[in-house]
Image (cartoon, rainbow, N blue to C red; front, side, top):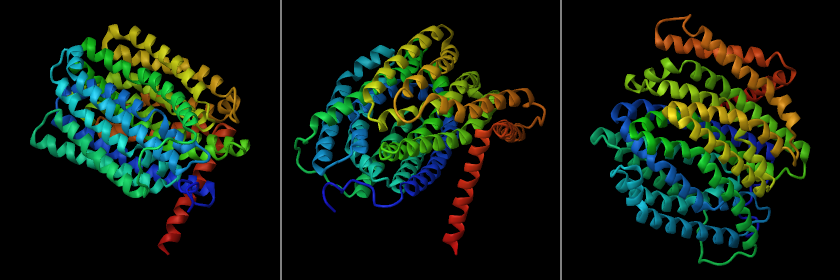
Length: 498
């Protein structure tokens, strides 16, 4: 294979690759959500809220540096039309150099970060976390190679291995020595093992550092992605920073657990789907009809799967949270409920990133990031007076406010128009809100037993959702596609067994 074709997908049907990729990612995400659920169930009983609060204080800083270390160059590897070995080698050394430099900066700043929070335990913890930045930098381009090649089965396997390793090490450590170090140990172990396997699966080894022929173009593309990521960082992490600074680790612990139990699983669906859709859509730019159909099909199917579950969890939060996490976490329930309304909108809004990146509109992406950051800063500042619950309510309101301008802005260019989004996704969004209202009104009518109550209301949520969706022509089309997809996967399983 020539250097120019080394990183391209194998020849074959793009639709088949996307279908298999989506199925593999769905399976891996099912496992990851399950491990996340077990993590919440077990670790919430082994560790104190303040332990999670301490890690949550460090998380925004680690997220910021992790974003800076990639400089948008992972997406450049995936999106660039003609990618050479020299390009990838250049990007690898840039990623690794940024990672090492940022890790050293974090080590130097760790005492100041502890001083900012007024919590001395944060200093050693965040200094130790600097090691994960270097480990991530070592595997960034190798993971991008797998993504560009559309080797989604291997990516799914890596995701599962990383999640299980993280959980096993964290639980094992917490059983022996229950403290916040258990959470760090799990993260470090999962990242290390996943990086080693990524190198093995990609089959590519870097050479000596050399300049790329299209160095300016690669860095320019990455700069736009980084600009959005910086502003998006504020939108996603400023709430944690504000709560930790003003209200302390315990209040932040309640907020962080609610946030992770609801919004993190949503990202665990949208982020892996992005790995499938961005390289696929990048190769459909010359076929607008095909591009539009692929995007709307995957978006609608993901909404069909996710939204009824979010509606159910939001409406039953006061019973769900104590049941899953223990009575000591009951203060997280109203926070979870407020965040649930943001969770209804994010599965619709987050995939707009697929459009920006696949169309190489990184400047537009960055501009929208500034708008989002401004809305979030105003919302968080407005809600902070009322503690974590006030911030959660403000966060949900901001998610609704930005939806219309976001879709108007992203659809000004490219094959997907806002009217098509409204027609295709409107029935699904309406159905989600009707489901939430229905479960809220009827949730206590079935049983006093919490497990029975939760199970029956989950069925009610999906039943109401499907009933409302089926009332619309576009909704019925989405349901038919979902049925055909399930039938196709079942047929493949039967064929493979014969």
